Length: 279
Image 1 (spheres, rainbow, N blue to C red):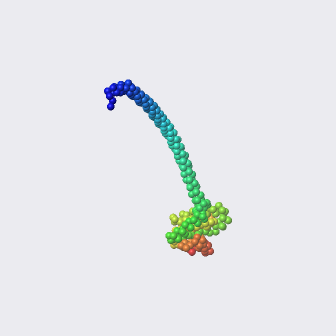
Image 2: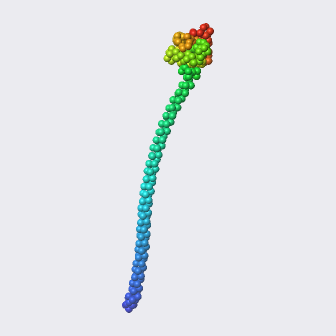
Image 3: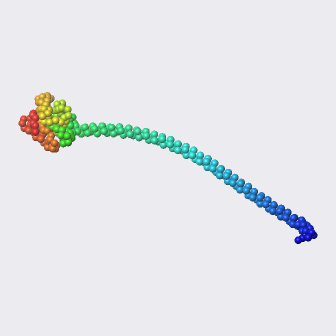
């Protein structure tokens, strides 16, 4: 334990040495804290400035990007509109051309069909008499035979030959012969019922196809014979025809059917001409 004298010395020592040292240390600590605070605030200000600059730059870039995007969109939109207008104009022009070509093609096709129809008619028509030629009447006969096989629709054929036609040509000339052929063909067409087909088989021979049986077609053949025999011809006193008639059967082929009619025709010739023979 200190005595009174020692206490006084200790107190004096504290006042003169310890207290001043403590105040200086405290000031040093305060200065250091203030310095650190100043450094921190400076760094914080720098970081705030950097952040502000960064935000500003990002905002600027964003605005630029938006403006560029808007500009590009406007440019692309206008370009697309221009291309769309050009495409529409091209389509309209193309459509117009196609319509013109289509109309021209349709007209050409119609003309071609009409020409083909005419050529088909000419190819199946006898140029002198106007009735079917051999090709045309053969097609009709083929069609009738097929119909007979499928539907049993009967029909008959008549072979007709102008009697003494060679003498007519020899004595009066081919011009008179041609006139006789045309007159005979016209008269046959006038006499036969509707639905019958008349064709020139060759030379002075004609073939008639009628969609009916022997009894009915026999009357038709007789009407033809009488009508031709009663006609008057320039340079000729009288012209007659011989006729061979037969009815088609389901199993007939064209050659066999025509041979029966032709045999009947020549039998009419042998029996004196100007008559109808049925086979």
